[in-house]
Image (cartoon, rainbow, N blue to C red):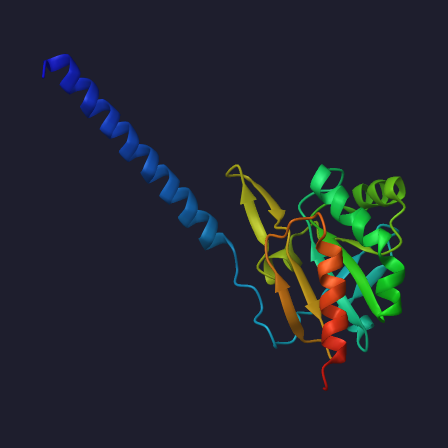
Length: 191
């Protein structure tokens, strides 16, 4: 092996080692920033947030109903629009199941208002612009190293206020139907 080839090989090895170190550091920082999600069977953490119309909502307001509390990253983005519109399209089936839908992102009330009006969303989307609720539910995630958004997770909360399902990093397409199916199955089980 000549010296030039050996030098190139050492340089490539150093670059790969550095890239792995950066990747592991980023992964460790991402994991460290995320609080742990509430456990299944535990009481869902309460909150007080404003919806797209400026009305305040607290989780305790929905006791006695099933709650699909879905977190999403950002208004006006393709996946979030798909998810919101599928929940919208199934609103009557959720209502028939005595269930409510609550969307949450770290966008502000004004952004939610525009998003809701554009897509005729008939359920509250809540502004967690201080990121406290996303953090408490363990879904606050850092993107590109600096931007903090909610991960696309859903918590299914039973009428007594306990978390009975946690759907992590969901595919927005078809997710509404999965949640609705699970509500109906859980309602059939004896309490």
